[in-house]
Image 1: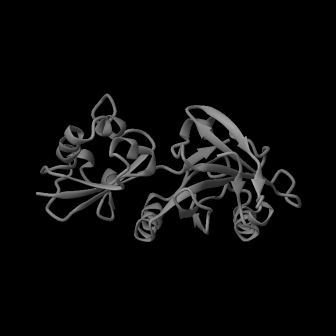
Image 2: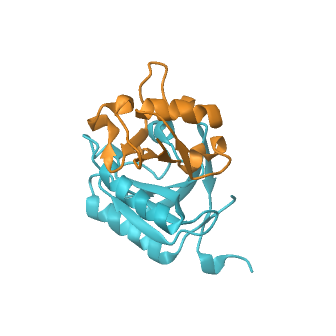
Image 3: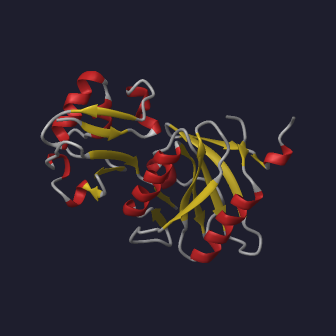
Length: 92
Length: 141
């Protein structure tokens, strides 16, 4: 199973500059773990110490925000696209 | 990066967005080719529960914009937002939440609504560096 993962600029230092990479697995977490074997440090930048999604990172499976699905344990299927986007946030 | 090249049109678009959302903070991004000059403004909805004090772009809208940028092979070159009651300088929250180290952070202050103040910064690993805002026509040949 091959899943496309779109990488934001800030994380392309882990993917040799590639803006999209491919991994395999049956959940988002497994795909990220597979990718970490090829692109060291990538999953560490996305997953916090408790195994959840890092603060200020948005992640989508196709068009759906994974926070409204099963987060990193959301199942994936061939042809799915995972997109990673740093949050646009701040304030006084 | 030693300066922020910004066209009059994009500067006007950001200021108009800030005025339109006042007293709430506005937010959005400017995008263009990687290492190039910003070509288009993408205003985003501020969905923070306290929009007068903070901003958080609508994640669904951010995804739609990101898809367009991916297809165009463009990047987020600038993240902008307004300060409606404080000067145009990054706050502690701005620094804490800055997630685009390769982008310019532009802030429009509306402390004086008749004279909006637009300033630009890099926010890198907690450090703030101000960049002069330069019109492309002012760029040295």
